[in-house]
Length: 539
Image (cartoon, rainbow, N blue to C red; front, side):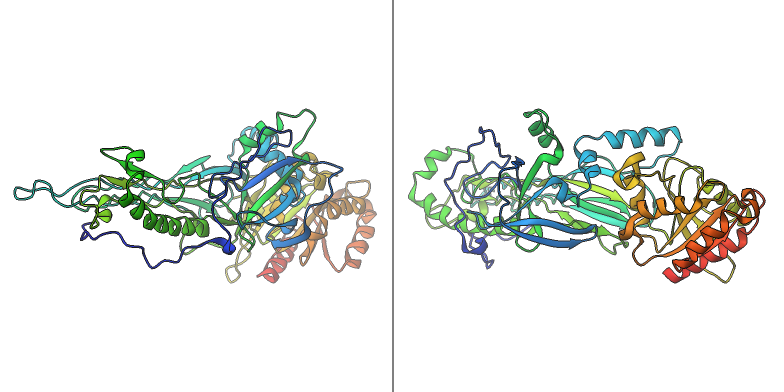
């Protein structure tokens, strides 16, 4: 962009010294001790959002108890207070950060469950991914240009070096298409850097942005660098992820504070003739740099304000009309056209662009459906779904499976809205403790409006089987949901001997129950109608 060259002036932006604290610190952190920190300090801001240590059973709890409500539940931590930089600190175990779900910590830092899940999904020939770790990086700003105007009448004219372009941003866009899997996402997203400024007061081009499309139902959490944590754990034997404590820098408003490893205010110069030492010995440069520091502090203040992410994450439960800013790009450096003063006629220096920001995120998909279909293995759930498909040819998206969740759409009548059902693979006893990848499956019924429990009357005790399902789903996932119990294999129950006690138990809970025989198609229409009633109540 062509601009009129004017001497650089301090803009009207207000510097942001957080909580009136001094920005600069000469403290040097000892990182060689047994209780190693991953938080390397610079001379003006921390370079990391977190500090790790192993749990010490004899160490008293730090700070005061605190909590914050998020889409996954209530996150409990300890409020440690304000550090020497003026940032609030929150102390918690990694297990607490993931709401007490050890499966998530192992997924993030070991990948064992992810590998098992991917292997099972490949066997079924269908791509399904509901957990994904992303490394996202915004673009660096372009460098300012050192250039001078020249023509036939002015061989040595005034400075006309333009500014570097700002780096590209990283955005999240929540979409309805490709619903049901995160498999299209790559592991790394990097926005383009801004280009350097040019002569004739031409600014560099803004770096290309990156927009990450995620399906509705995705939750997004910031996580520590998995590779750094693995290296940290490798230095101690017999230590697990659950033994690691984490102290997070926060904004004091429920947001994780992220930092860029970049130059301090007053630094970041590039020179075309003499070196840094030469100019810093000059009074005119020192006077100019005092003003440039103010500008740099404004830029750093804006970075600190924007480089934040909610401690409890982002719940992408609805499509977005415009993308959500995840990471902002680095600011472009100032060209030498800004540094023409009465004492500096030929400024042969400019400013480098600011760095971008890199962070890791855990994406978790929870299928969104009107109903969640849950049963023990061999309860006849697949036969029930096939019977529904025969009764309703317009059943969409269903791929009958035993190893991964999927969503089906059921059309009832021409004057009624269809409803969706999330089919959850067979739940085993202990699923809530993550047996049989139970936690990976149970997450997909959390967003459903109602639950359909499938119980086989062929079982020795259908009532006990139902109680297993209720216990494994748990009160949190059942809260506020209507329940329908489908008793399958009704043709194998002698004179209703297993059905009547089950019916009495279900109706005592205020729920509905329907016996079906899927191979014969008995009561399938009634089952569909009752499922539709619960789904409509959800709407």
